[in-house]
Image 1 (cartoon, one colour):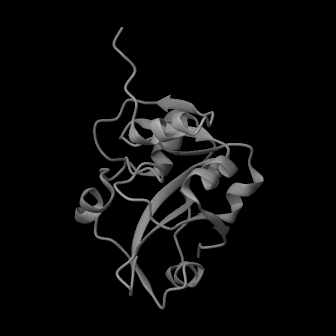
Image 2 (image 1 turned 90 degrees about the vertical axis):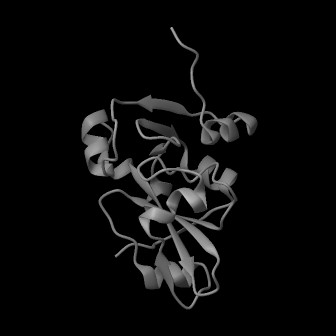
Length: 158
């Protein structure tokens, strides 16, 4: 049996003594969050995707939203005190975050960016987010995620 591979996201959680569960699934290419939840049996309402946007100021921001929802760019911009924001193009995800599309975790990016988690996460004991690579999810307390990413909770969806 091979050595368990840790991602940057997991290393950060370990370093901060935050408990989490790792959920792995077979997946060679990008699949969206809904298909991931279906494949793993994760509850859709508790599964969140990580989106990265850039503001008018050129600052990057991380938004953690339910997988079945879309981020409301106006509301999200207001949450981070920007006039406007735009999601970054897919081809820039790796350059900005260090992660690939479908494996982008709100934890362990190249730099720590201001982070906003959708407020629906607060009602759950645990949520599912990307573990930092395709085929890996992390299950953790949303308050722990907010603590380690210095995030705030806001309603940022359509």
